[in-house]
Amino acid sequence: MDCCETNDELIPLENAWAQLDQMFSSVVASHKVPLLDALDCILASSVTSPISLPPFDNSAMDGYAFAHESLSKEQGGRLRLVSERLSAGTTPQTPLGIGEVVRIFTGAPLPPGADTVAMQEHCTATDSTVTVPTNIECGTNCRLSGSDIKEGSQVLGHGRRLRPQDLAMAAAMGFDSLEVYRPLRVAVLSTGNELHEPGSRLIDGGIFDANRYALLSLLRWLGCTPIDKGIIRDDLHSITEALREAAEGADVVISSGGMSVGEEDHVKPAITSLGKLAFWRINIKPGKPVGIGEILGKPFIGLPGNPVSAVVTFNLLARPALLRLAGCDDTMPVSFQVKSGFEHSCKGSRREFMRGRLITSSDGNATVEKFRTESSGVLSSLVETDGLIDLGETKEVNIGDLVSFMPFGMLR
Image (cartoon, rainbow, N blue to C red):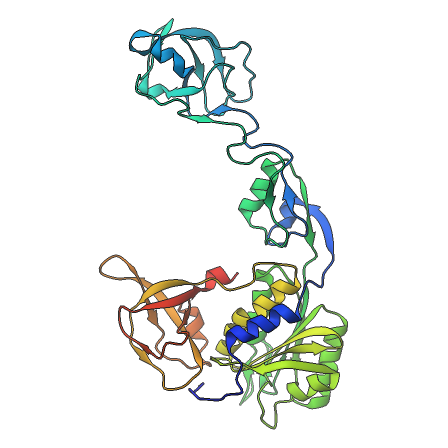
């Protein structure tokens, strides 16, 4: 279990983030892919719209189109119905005159002369006339060309991680492919004599390797291409050679375990023999021993061995670093303020990230409850919660206080 402590050598999280921004930039080339293959990829060049959206003035409702000026010339909003009917995909054949009205359906182009559409539910129609509301405002139910996107405007910026709605926008502008960065290839390995592969026979003193599966899954979430390098035994030569091989076949290397200073923690000396560490002790709880540096010219991220610490530090440090290396501009975790449903006190100096579960309180508002234990070895604390409670500089939390909450779902 991580304990609170004071140590002036620990790097504040904000300083670590600033160093990551200085250390890393995109290391991958770009290529053009079909639109659907671009999901979760990072845009390599900005997208400018070749057309306006909507491309033409059209009706937002099923109803009747007319010139608003007609209402000042016709008694009671009674207008003459023309024979044409306008539906989506058609082209108006004749302009609409003052005092005239035309049947129109959602998405249909407005005919020249029309600037207002009355909903059919608000109109009274006969075979030759339609009575429309006289209090309707000019432009009602009309979607004008370019009211969403102007032709020539930048719509999707470089470095954007593409979501389904972004692909929909690209399709609406007529793009069937996009220039994106190639997925970042990330090698992942676990270290520890106690680790066994799931599905194998578990011997006394052994545990199944959960960290590697968490990290490989998190990498897939980020749109990276994970490379599974398996479990490496706790000796300096094996770890050094495994890291060397991993660096030769990947853009980035991530390890789990062996980052502390015990006699069986060999990752740090292995790294220094192959490259260098920029920093390796962060002022956070859980997850103090995190190593960031490079081996054989490739970025390296060393995470703690405790499963909660590994996941927390991945999200707080590895995720921003990987997104930056992959070409993404928006790399920082997203959080929001929510009321605390718990009391907590910390006597140490490390910035705490507690696991929390969102609930609806009796007043109908969202409240966050902390998990029953703060141990970094309790994997169920990640399964049974919704995100991380960032206490920041706060040392005392009371029920009802606002705390910063970082949902796991927004770390994707």
